[in-house]
Image 1 (cartoon, rainbow, N blue to C red):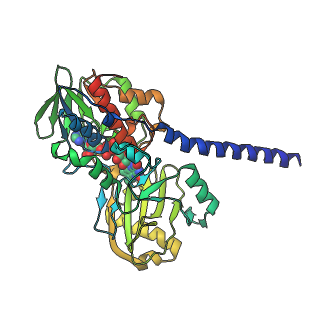
Image 2 (tube, helix red, strand yellow):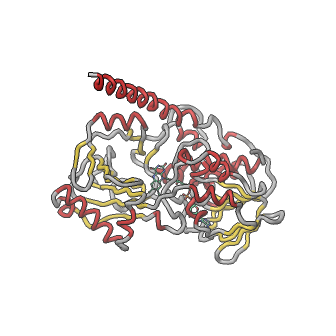
Image 3 (cartoon, protein in one colour):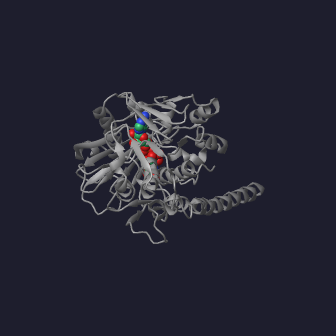
Length: 406
Ligand SMILES: Cc1cc2nc3c(=O)[nH]c(=O)nc-3n(C[C@H](O)[C@H](O)[C@H](O)COP(=O)(O)OP(=O)(O)OC[C@H]3O[C@@H](n4cnc5c(N)ncnc54)[C@H](O)[C@@H]3O)c2cc1C
């Protein structure tokens, strides 16, 4: 009896803590969205700015420069813009996000990213409140209760774009006015900030000169030392860069003739995450597209397979075990695979700034001699994660660069 009452007490305490942290979590991210950004300010800056990288953060920073008629250009290593934002329109009858897909923050964040006032958003969203989910540990396939799904949704309400993508959102609202300033196929290999001007060397040997530079490459690219800084980065900065966990991973979208799977299957992994999910969830679509998102240790098993076809075959084999051969029977032979973890210009999937030590985040964000500044997902001071975090970091860092204020 004593045991029962103590257990009950502990359960009630845990429940209380959980419920209060649910509210805290939702309220916390919402409260951290800034009221105004650099888009709402005006700047009189005379010098030349170069942005390295045309992902969400680089494009956002450029939008501020464009708005204020400041002399700038963007050096992008690849032949496209968007970075970890990418869409496909060939596999299904709806556009698919091959990179970022969910809106993890409160929907109102979309207005902040565009610089639009008010609480009414224009985008049509799907609340990502799952109805039929299962777990799979390699042996047992088990249905999750609706209360578990409700709990997840209440703890961290998420949404998805209904007929569009994250790529479309950034393309239309941010890239549209700045894309003419991108110099594609220009991987920066060296940033020399020892003199009055900052000199950037690209792989093809060209030298670009600027008064100030904003570096927005992923933490994976910074870790890989593909860019040489002169003078070298401090020991403290290098340690802060290396302390950030940037998991390898990939996204696979497979097309089937039939929908034999539930909304989501959470797979048991030692670290990171792995899950199959219905990419067409609540979309008005006919195509049956199942996603597989893998990040962390379980990626290794797939990377060892060495070819895309073998990775797809392995995923279908796993589904066959759960669904008694149904996956092979209904597979159309069509898929899309984006291997972000092994992509030279990304070298990983995503980071979560709120998991890092505050002092490391501060160090990462520190400019070099007030000439070279940093932005990008990991430099998100508003803890919004993913794309909102990257865009807001672009606005925040360009404000610091233009004003010289900390
Ligand atoms: C599979 C996957 C799923 C994700 N899911 C979500 C999600 O659901 N929701 C969400 O909000 N976020 C998600 N994210 C994270 C989100 O995509 C990123 O947070 C965001 O896109 C990062 O933007 P960024 O500008 O900081 O960096 P990046 O997008 O990495 O942009 C950096 C740019 O720099 C360029 N570059 C690299 N090296 C050089 C060089 N040497 N010289 C010049 N240019 C260079 C790159 O080509 C790239 O264009 C996901 C990411 C992945 C990979």
